[in-house]
Length: 389
Image (cartoon, rainbow, N blue to C red; front, top):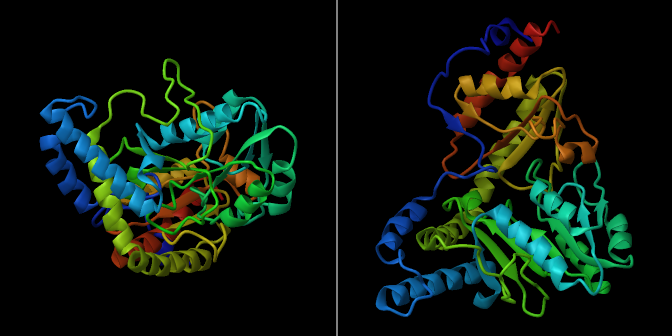
């Protein structure tokens, strides 16, 4: 490593314009979302279940948003419902899907790299059978077929693409295996919607508006016709999903409008962001010693890349990059509740410490990426040097 790289002070204050590179957690609001949110607040404040004029106007907005989301996802409007968040939608899908299939069994089969929302719901559900992945984070289909074919399986859950490493999962093949045994498949599509199409064959699907540039607080739950779903919440005997509590209708309208806008840009943005991610993957591997770029290099989301740096504390690395103006995330940061590294990286069998997830969005520029790649080697070297390595 040359002297120029070593002289970069990883403790320095930010230089240049801050760059937000954590769209996988929450994408910056799309301009259409802002416009729709303001417009909907004029007529979307009333209770859409009331019969007076203000309620009827709100009901029209709700039905229009529901129809728009359904068209964007290529499903029926009456298959779509809104939840208070993506996490709430996941919980409703898993718990409601299991409740609806109680006569078939209590077992949930899921990939080992599901979002923690699925794992927490599974812990309440009864028996859960995790299915492993390979080094790239891709589902072991043979093990999946065996698991969903076992007795007592009520529901299967497969994330459409890893939220930590970007690997796209074989949803179509997994759905075929489920169909052979009459097991409904739930797909958590939070990272995929607005980025890449989700293959057909699933029975339940969830998404989160703030992942595609809509407002926070809007989760989407889709339950296909013919799929048994029972509300897992007390005091609610509806046989179709409904949100718990009042619906944030202006946010729902903004979510629907922004999804249409994002999908209209999806192909162009995917090509642009794929090229930037390829640059990050190649440059990090070439300029940072003892680094492992993880995830499938080909079958992956266009906007996300993850790498792990040996002999580097992940939290220290994130804080150092933040001081230089780069907002990134980590799949390996321990939490106060578990004190464990990422279950996704552990399941893959890859390096889980010194982990950085970079996820791009429509406002990310080539200059943002170039500055990040210029600063990163010195930041990593500085942390290692301070640790005496």
